[in-house]
Amino acid sequence: MSSSAYKSSATSPASSAQNSPVDGCSLRARDLSCERDGRVLFAGLDFLLPAGSALQVEGANGAGKSTLIRTLIGSTSDYHGDILWRGKAFPGALSVMRSELLYIGHNAGVRRGLSPMENLAWYGAAAEDAMAALDAVGLYGFEETLCQQLSAGQNRRVALARLYLPGAPQLWILDEPLAALDVAGVESLESCMRGHLQRGGSVLLTSHQPVNIQPLAKVNLADFQPQESHLEAEYGF
Amino acid sequence: MGSEAVEVSLSKKAQPGKARGVALAAYARVPGFYTLFRTELVLAARRRSDIVNPLLFFVTVLAMMPLGIGPEPEMLSRMAPGLIWVMALLATLLSQESLFRGDYEDGSLEQLALQPQPLYFPVLAKVLVHWLVTGVPLALLSPLLGMMLNLGAEGYWPLFVSLVLGTASLSLIGAVGAALTVALRRPGLLLALIIMPLYVPVLIFGTGTVQAALDGYSFGPQLAVLGAILAVAAALAPLASAGAIRISLEN
Image 1 (cartoon, each protein chain N blue to C red):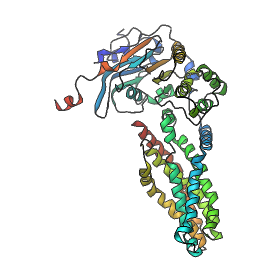
Image 2 (image 1 turned 90 degrees about the horizontal axis):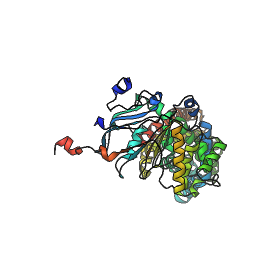
Image 3 (image 1 turned 135 degrees about the horizontal axis):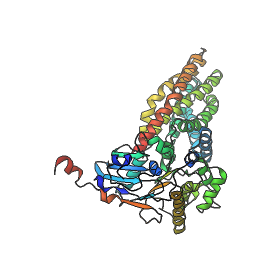
Image 4 (image 1 turned 120 degrees about the vertical axis):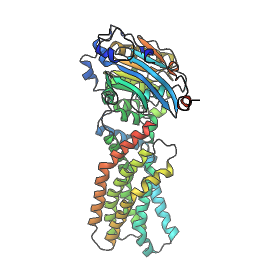
């Protein structure tokens, strides 16, 4: 294991899969810490997300899940530590990573003045692919209705329909994808994510509810709380 | 702390990207300039009030002017170029605030910013549509309002041309302010404070064009300056807006 050059450079203990060629497709965080408004949200966060696997980020409200995700997609550069995509560090690797990224955030990127079909077309989907994807998320019959007339859950489904389009990018980063979905919607999304993992993709998601996909690793941000408060570190009390 | 690494055991079944990676990358792009432009046009056509409101403002306020300052034809005709230009400027400013707001709130601006290609062209597409639905109708209406304010007939054509060129510059410059204030909840006055000073040269040369024509001089030089302002704004303002959008998205 220690023969791997990649391994020796990492601060974390070895895993048995390091010599696999898919190792290059991984997203890795090393000793990552973020702070917001003077409060350290998490520190010393390490994880490895190889191709073909999923990672669920857990944590209470306000624990920093969304901040972590915004850091990983490069929306904010206010962090300490390293983020690596395919073994290359941010920010140099950011544009490469973004070209292989499908991100669905808290604001799902659904334009309310457009219909679901037009929304998917905006994301570059061909008409028949968009039709099939909307069918898969249960929006059959709503293709041409304006999104402002759809419910919150249906708007969520429009955003998630991007995951069902053929030729999805390698890395999916999903912030609360299960929010506002009904039971059938959750099951459909899980099987979609399982298919993506089998094709060698990776999924990083935040969720408060259990997600039934394999292989799934979990990171709980509560385990990476700083030991001492910001004030203690700085002023010694 | 580094020893606390969380690692995912790699399934042996997982297939590496193989040749797929290349084919897959073609998807999930926000499409090219033409599609962006068409989408913006569709959205603008569906929010008709956004188009009609600035025009209504423009027409109503100018119709009030003779009531407020008196109906003497000489005075009105002397003030007409300035009044029409100031009102066009305010009408543009009114509609500018919402330029990026909807896209910011629904997250599509973030999706655009995540694309590997620059934000220059999406911003240009939005500004172009904004100009087409506010600036061009204002310019088209202006001779009618000129007639209402007793503007000399020789001023109609310069007024129209200067408004077409000038409102395009106003839309471009205003986009910078709109991008800077997009993350604020109530940008109202701040937006005006940021971009009003930048509007001043356009206003000066816009009214100057009409005044020169009314006084019987050649108005070509003023139009040339307006064109030059537009050329500079078209090159630089989308860049500045793109940078401002990225700053706004960081918070």
